[in-house]
Amino acid sequence: MQNLIDIEKITTETIGDTSYKLLIGGEWQTAAGNSTFPVDNPATGVVLSSVPDAGVRETQAAIDAASAALPGWSETPALARAALLRKVAALMLERRERLATIMTLEQGKPLSEALGEVAYAASFLSWFAGEAERIYGQVVPASAGNKRILVLRQPIGVVAMITPWNFPAAMLTRKLGPALAAGCTVVCKPAEQTPLSAIELGKLFVEAGAPAGVVNIITCQDPVPFSETIFKDDRVRMVSFTGSTEVGKLLIKQSAETVKRVSLELGGNAPFIVFDDADLDAAVQGAIDSKFRNAGQTCVCANRILVQAGIYQRFAEAFTKKVIELKVGNGLQPGTDIGPLIDLPARTKVERHIANATQGGARVLTGGTPWTGAAGREGTFWTPTVLADVTPDMLVSVEETFGPVAPLISFTHEDEAIRIANDTPYGLAAYFYTRDVSRVFRVAEKLEYGIIGANDALPSTAQAPFGGVKQSGLGREGGSFGIDEYLEVKYISIGL
Image (cartoon, rainbow, N blue to C red; front, side):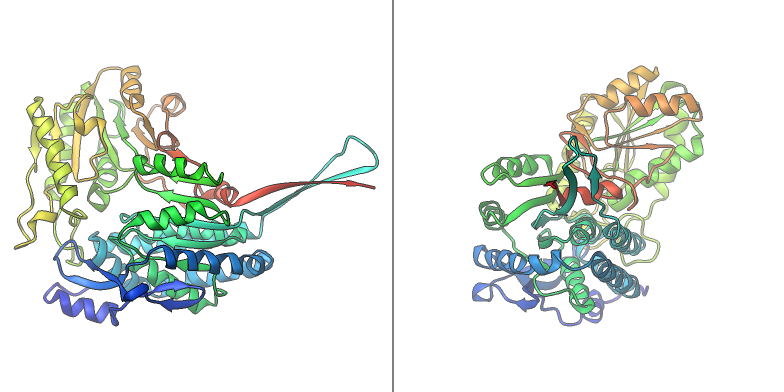
């Protein structure tokens, strides 16, 4: 990609028509009164585009469209549903650079990471295209000779999807893939910070020939009217949400009134454990990859790095040396490793965590301050930070930082590491490095997390189940388990 000389010129060339609209019933529409809100680039402050600020009326129209499209889509042969998903996946890869550039512009992550996310996002559509062709039922032996028992798996119905800003393409396709493969129709609400990627995906579904109403996209600045509308409507049978645990709890309460199914991927507090028998170089690189991807703004990134006392100093030195080498900057600049935080409240949280840790005796080995390399926009950037002598009771250990801050905690014994790792209400992802095969099984089985990376800092993949335990969520996305969330089981007893 070219160097950043004129971001407004790049924006115009990449996005083209900067007017985005809602996708409802196969038509691109505005919100009532042409109400809009701006979407800006967190690295520069430049307004990229405006998008419709939808409310109850538009949300209701999207539900109407999805409900009307449901009978036809659910009866569409699985091979045809799979063909649509594969076509959209191919279009995503064909337009990969454009989609990635738009993602970097609205979200801030380095372009190399955005390119990887587009491919990752497309993989969910490809994977679930295959799963659409394998939605099998059962013939169950009956207890009487004059009966036959059949079990069918059918689409749950209209699904509402609420996706986050940190992975605006992948989190949407991870839900769209299984829902559409199962025969459901959908109403999607992307995060208000990053709606452009979702609308661009909507354009590809329209281009690929998705029937009107199968995919609907609503953008809004205030999520409350959208949420209240989908939860009140009996036709919406499921809500899939990725976001904070606090919001997830509210959605569970709202789902009770109409007994909707909820699939929730919520907050995390991932431990990254390095035992003294680990391959040190691999563990250091793994910690870099896990902690600093997307500037630490991922729900599965290493939030606490636990290092056994015998190698603590060596690890701290090697890790800090690599962190110092990370390049901070605009995501479109070649060689950038760390982009901006999504907004100023994110910076405030990072500052609060570092201040709490240093006041409690933690030492800053590198970083610890805002990055001032972007004139006038340093407020959204933070220098990659390593903290030593962190204790498990500090905010940086207890809360999900969601920023480029790596706290190092020393432990002595395996049981102590497991106790510290599990001492949290969250249970999304955990990582550990060791060369002891017995320890691999022992520790993996004792860690109370839905995803375990044993000598693997990047375990996420379309063909494996993704999800957490405890207060990190309900259900699984990805793998053969992912489509089950969108299917109902129907038992048919036939008397002969």
